[in-house]
Image (cartoon, rainbow, N blue to C red; front, side, top):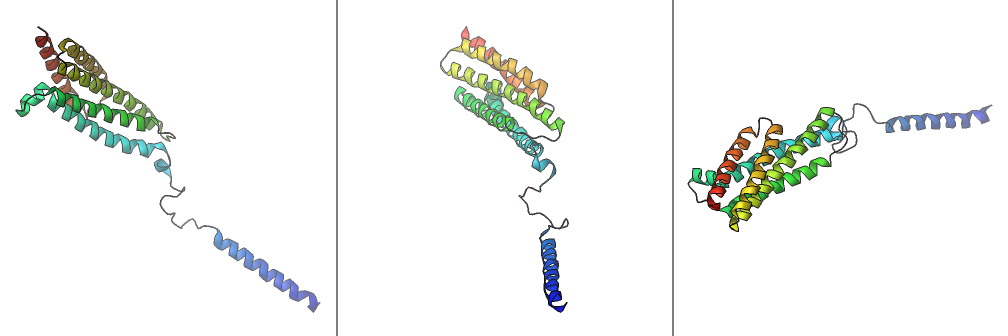
Length: 199
């Protein structure tokens, strides 16, 4: 009997040791998970947080670029007491168009939304960015035509920009509302000036 109890004790001891060791390897629920691991939960795991962060940045950047473009229209230049230069208007409009393009390209790639309202908000904002891109692109083309002394063509592009601005105003919300109104005033004035130059 003794000859069998020794190996049994060793076997039992080994088994208990293995169970204890395995227990140590199971992660505790109270142990914090390091940042950057797959245990990050909520919006950080989805497109929601990415969209909200990009939206906030894009709103500020678009506002700044809109303001800059408005400063280079004839009305804006006169308000600043600076000479109007079509080249500066074109350059600032191209910067706004590039910014709208970049934001659109980045946002359209966002996937895995948890909140439907964030996905809907993203889709609506993509439409707004498209409208802003048209406003900026047509404004840049108008300024380029003006530089070539093609005032009728400049007027046509400016009118296309004003039409695109209507779409942007409908989707802008309150944050860019005043800037878009200012853009409308600037475009109306610009169109009138191009009409006068055609005569």
